[in-house]
Length: 165
Image 1: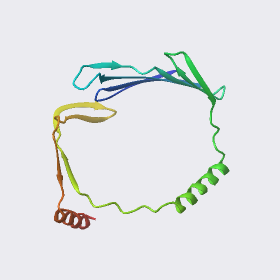
Image 2: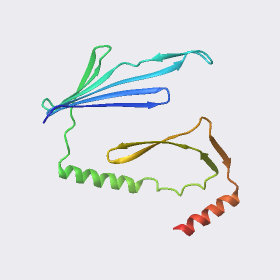
Image 3: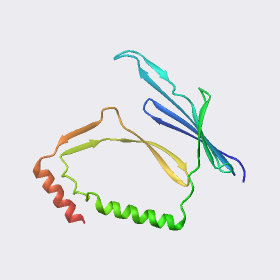
Image 4: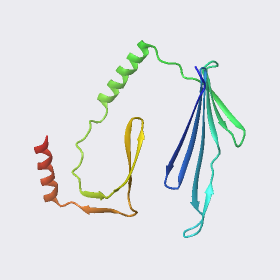
């Protein structure tokens, strides 16, 4: 098997996480770097914040998992969890089923009391990804409407939902 490197960048508002995974036949290394901007005081400037770079190394040949803090040059290690045998899996499944039966039963969800409408706009941009056409959409800032639902609306909604089933 050839070595493999996978890089993933995730952005959520001011937060950015870069994850790089290196795979070899007998080991795996996952490095993660987070970045975000935090306001220094209300109405003040935002400064970049960088938590420590961390990595997890799984060594199948040694049966160990190492957690590394790359900035402080510290690490911890622990043994890899052993997979359950088929008998242990069956016993664990039965135990979880018994615990679920003893626990509280799911309750019917409450009727909705708010209507939240969010408007998005299609930008017209299209890209081919993994054999599918992906489209881009935008949501203008503060373009949502929250309205309390009246009892009559809830009843008509329930009737419409029952008719469609």
